[in-house]
Length: 354
Ligand code: XIL
Image 1 (cartoon, rainbow, N blue to C red):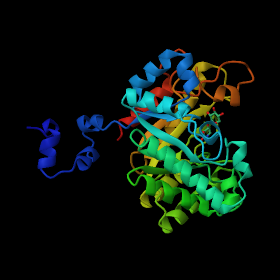
Image 2 (image 1 turned 60 degrees about the horizontal axis):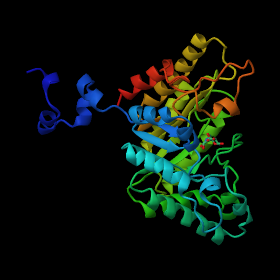
Image 3 (image 1 turned 90 degrees about the vertical axis):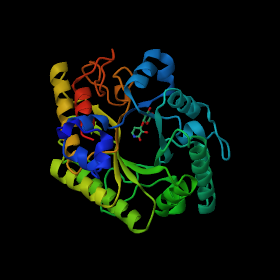
Image 4 (image 1 turned 135 degrees about the vertical axis):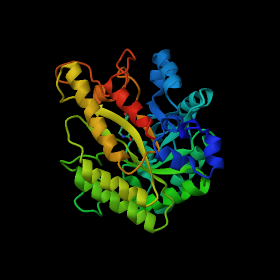
């Protein structure tokens, strides 16, 4: 009998762990361990095009609410919750056997006006605790991973100690991050608690400094015993910006050494400055995603890959970063007619490297 004919059970009985087996590169096992893939979903898009839900159910294992859990949609007033938007995504996930990735509990942006009227640390902590406990409890059956704090580092990090300003930081100081994670862990000790950030991967502009500040923050949190379990690489890739392949790979390895899982949480490619030619543009996008993934996978597989949408038909890039030449943006794995593009094939290839 050749070793490739061994069943998983034989391998386990024989004392070889499944991990060791997969690590030897046997294709049969590697396929079984396909990495989970997810897409972010915005409820109005689901209503606008029934095919979107069908394709997500077919292609995804995970789904992230785009806006539904943000405070401006979920918190009409202090002590009040509007669960309807979040429930719609959670129910979609439940009905289709998908995991929901909770996005996002504490953020500087997309907050309702009433939050700005809080004036004391005690009031801020009370609101934050109530929010975390209520949402994590309500969706605990379907959401086992959460972006607990989103975007804690400013775009221009002037030192490794730079932290982004927010209502939370103004009232609670930098401790707001640790407080949020500790609360989340107390509510659901099994949940995977994630610190999520963008612009961590590039070789140019403000990205290296942002990466250094993010690494400093994560180290500080882990050293202080804060229950952070993963980092979310948003990966809103800026088309044409080179990935810092070696430096970013080292950063990811450092994060793993701290015991953290690596999640790709919001992948898309802002293609407003890329060539008009679709073939050329799609190839550049696929190459940039490949560079990112090679750096990410250099120290091992990631936890999951989520794209910020599924099809170019529904994407924030369309209105946030439109192309001057009027040709449609192509930031996502499927085109506007749901046909897979080269970026899709890159994702599928790396999913097999579990
Ligand atoms: C974006 C949504 O896609 C938009 O619809 C919304 O108006 C603004 O937020 N990083 C994040 C996401 O963590 O929540 C953002 O989503 C994109 C950048």
